[in-house]
Length: 636
Ligand code: ACM
Image: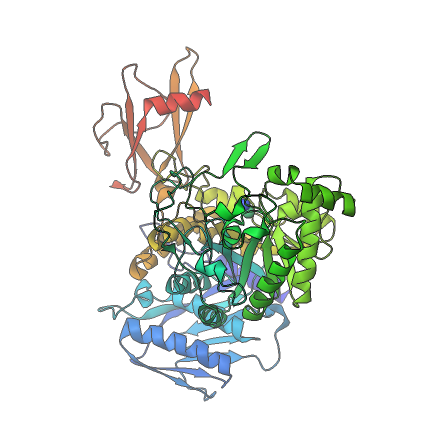
């Protein structure tokens, strides 16, 4: 009854008021479970004390908070490591656990005279602080003192806890290497939105990124390729004399530092070593891991074509797979996972398992002998034999194994957790078999996909708009939700060469993923979310974080009218935008024709230019759409 009353009040009171520019006054992402505006404002004093109950972890959280408050406000700020009751901001642990909050929930009460965050565990306090920061003016997130800001926040009562325990983002540092400082930056940003798992891809065809002391060639050879720029995937193969000096790796000390840094932000790091496919960097370092003769001539991939994708699947042009029939491979993996397990405290290790080409295995005598010996009927069973042996190795190090959904093929390893990426199908199948699942369906959460029209975005083979990402639901119908641990967004970096573009691909889609994984399903609301994203953009401007504004751009569709002539239709993801267009090659503005109904393309036009406006101001970027491109789409 009391709970119902709170829900009712929160619906009434948290009905967020929108200012003129459509941005809500309170814009917390992910949306809290209960939020009640209680009236009045809290004003930060010029001398701030952050009071904790003396717990060491709370001290760390308090020092992070104090550092940011000082940086942005220029005020004096200090920690009181005791519950004196007079601190400006109180960070407290519940003496008696509040069961509804679990391990990560918190309560946050701000009123005109105080700010109090309470939780059962320090993680909850940390998340309460992240919410608190979003209540302050955006300048609180800045890197230097902001002048002329009223350091006020609205009085609210918030009770909040996550829907899922697995709230991940994947960062591929293999295709392009990103430094320790860049990874820390990534962790900072994900933690702000209450993500708690960083899945880091440490080994792939393009680079081995973690020092393994017992296998030094992995980083002497495997971490380096030839620097190429342009459109990854079809680069001219490097010549033997081109320097292999592009890349890098994390030393074990770097890894320890990252693990510690992440843990202070309540982020677990999930290391991925992708085997048996995508293993060219390992094979270039240790060629006898391959079944194929001539592997000693293989080099770490620099972005040249190595796979042939066709309707029925794919073949490798060179053998980038480890040899499941070779005992040396398991000795190698034992060494790798021994060191990986010692470095990462998280309970899981990811063994990849995706996109393993079988065309070289099919020709291998060693594989044929293995099949005869083990009674394996096909290549899927060969792969499954390999995966089951890897699971034994990983479990012998005291860890649980997780892999991409291909590990279902040929028979799933007994205790494996499945990361479903080719849609939700693999996840559904695994959950029905009683296995835990992490949902990362490519059609909802692949952050390497283009966010807007391919005519105006850096080219990738697929598109995923913000509203589609926001519609992601991790628990499929008919599946027992207890098997769905949560989900994550995956940022592959074939086409991501630097941090600015990494940020552009992450945001705002990761905001949508954050809200899906943390907030109650019933609290998700696209229009509200868009308003909050707009306010978050302002905060990201202060933080100097890059993000995509593609949600303001038009979406094109084509059809033929009754007289067989080409018609173009346009919509937008965001409501309330006006679309203006030209066919005469000039730049349209809001004095040009406004799109209302499907338009016929003038016979002689070769270019359509389009721009979106809101309230008389340009808001999207101008898109130049060749008419030939529209005709091509009609055929497709
Ligand atoms: C994947 O995207 N190949 C897991």
